[in-house]
Length: 578
Image (cartoon, rainbow, N blue to C red; front, top):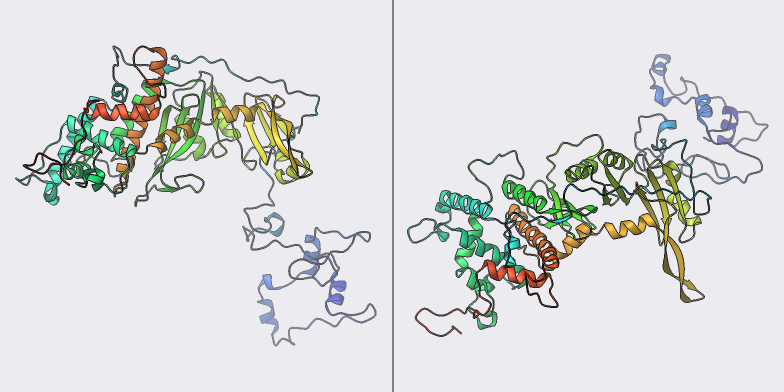
């Protein structure tokens, strides 16, 4: 029944009576065959109180307004009924006034972040928002490469060995030999003639690292093709690094990064913990980032069965191990990272807030600028970072907790605004800004002025022809585009020559990523060293990342620059096999 009618009028309309007809009486309990005692036992929800329905009405009618047809069920044609959303609303046990309408989580509730002091401004306002929150940069160490004492490199591999040091590789050799000695009985195909494990050594372990990196440069259809006897596959250098295919598979089978006898079963990263901590410690000790740093997530490709596998639909690598990374925006050096395994307790401020605070440990009070995307950016994070002396610039989800309520009607602003228009709200050091380009971009910055801008050109179609027009681009958007690409550039280096190969153990894919981190970070250090010492290395004019990797692989495997390509030769034969 329409909620705005009086009970008698509603009954008259329900029974289709004219104004002069009498309303039939309501049926009594005896007409339904119910006794008075049974009637009293009716559930309260089954009894209709027309007075209560009338009081709950919030829809008003006017004689001057056209009457819209009713939506949803209930209500006759030509009368305004109750507007109902599709589906069932959340929280069905709450009163109707407090309940959200339709699908979604309580859309009828008041928005958090509404502030009476919020003032919405645009380009045309006289207030130019003259704010410059750029902090003075006072790092604890000079930004750049910090080599260990008495470091005098004369080969490219010397920079890689700063990460995979002799101490680290020695531990890998010990852990691998211990694990193989305990489990060789179950893998007799990898045993020697005496049925025992042939211990590996540091030279062979470095050759294994070189071969894994080489497989990222030179792709073969199968793993066995690297040792193929066919002349079609001659010319690769796998046999020069590890002569036997069987030995290579044995090393990968028994490779271990930790002591299997003392592993903590409750630690999800127990298989990679020692190497993970060591690579992270070396990455931070050898380099100090520039003022602009960025935080983003990376993905290590893996579809194995383990508890912390992640799926991110918008990433090029959708399935795998998620890694939170902090990189230098200028050099793409990965200074800090954290493998996500859901072991850290989450605070009331949220998981994304906690991740950024852990990654930024060691940068407090030095005037750093951090760039994040809308997964991390929030007013809470901006306040927490400013408390420790770090500024924040990032894209923002307008429905985040703490965002001004006046900025939440994004669709309405998109319809009314022209390309290049902005609107913003200033709250102390934080400026919340929305700019319309091809779509609405929402930003949060603690260092930029809202009205500072740079001119940019965009194409506009006029009379079937495209012409260039100039619009204003906020300075915070321009700064974000320049400072946010650190992690993405690091991923581009990794993806170009990825050493990852399919394997059954998820933790081995993480180990392959450690090799990638060491190769990319050492390449950054090598480039910085060559810029400061141009006489140290003779680099070709087209020197790139590929050249550096090739040099590291050859030097790790102890392959001379003029060495001949190893060919398979039959035993007792002086010529290569056909």
